[in-house]
Length: 195
Image (cartoon, rainbow, N blue to C red):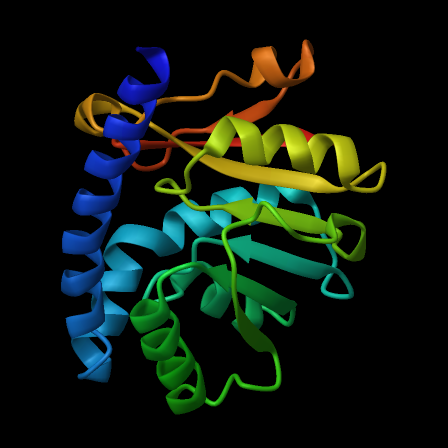
């Protein structure tokens, strides 16, 4: 029963994610509206998340769940980081690769096929998980068990109306200790855990 409920919730999350990806993909066509969208909805969030991590630009970053418009990866690459992105959806992956090339960031961002369950986490200094990544709790536990000590893990929890769609993951359940959070966007709360 619980497994069916979990699968149903993941399906619903994937359907919503698909709709949002189509909207985001349209912003890839024209540069100015896309940049405006990024600035309005993500730059403050990303700036706050990056400040939480206190990373220097020598770090290697993994972003799980890039979508068709890999705003997190682009933001980090523009700050000087090298980013590997994982995207399970083939169409979203192709669109993100096309945008990365268009933005001139192909030397800093590489997008691979995957969902975060089969990754060598020891290669990364920081790992970002997008809001829609599922099964988030499972992937976070895998990261916490396999990443090197000191690896920073940022994940986005739903808040407000998004909490009705996505299941939040309490950082205390994962670590039993503290985490740092930022609530820049009312519908998302960023959590930082250090392995």
